[in-house]
Picture 1 (cartoon, rainbow, N blue to C red):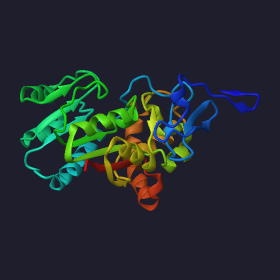
Picture 2 (cartoon, one colour; picture 1 turned 30 degrees about the vertical axis):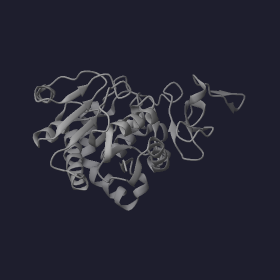
Picture 3 (cartoon, rainbow, N blue to C red; picture 1 turned 90 degrees about the vertical axis):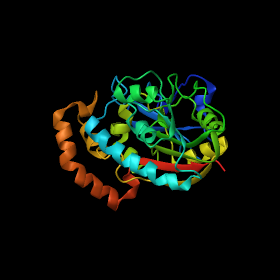
Picture 4 (tube, rainbow, N blue to C red; picture 1 turned 135 degrees about the vertical axis):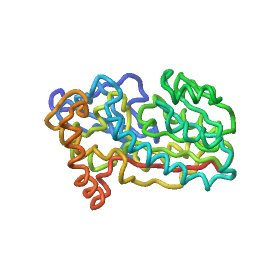
Length: 299
């Protein structure tokens, strides 16, 4: 809110005025008139209150495309399988997915005879979920903050576009650390608050379309948060193919101000036509890539 030429921003509770990662006082960053976020001057961590930065957010949480999600699922599964040789006993693992959705990715581990665990905020339905449950998966339906996870049992933990939704990420990482055994890996994919796309598109950046995106980590802030929880960060990188339609969708949102842009057939067609151009821009300019993937270990 703007008063007398000076920005005055009110939050509920003292914690929202300070960085949840490094406890520095947050500063206001204006993305557009009527759209303010808070950024940490030390680690770059971005905190978003949808009342102050509505950015034309859609009403529902999910606003993607099942076809593009299958593309993401394929590459995520391949990436996770590439991590298994780094574990002590890759043939018999305890694997946790936080935010398992329709269960397809978790089922792929179950088919390989791994013991699987899944966390969701509500009880999803579908054939894959039924099979997970029937074949002995440990499923939790009250969110990560409330899940009663086993102690020192998990070998592999992964969270694909989940941490930006959590109410208290540091508390959640500490819970995951307690559930991980020595040598366990944790793999995350999440939007990058340092992405040049946020600077270029401002409030039209497609990641702001989701009303439950509460924060955007940076490479520094996610590593600090994981270290505080006890994990040892190993690698932070910017994946080329994650959210491959984001730049096109952000361009559309410059003109389509409200609702889910991918609801429209014309937009999905435009995505397909312009994806090669978007990928070329990411190859030439890594800073515009919208996501980061993080790998850490419990030593």
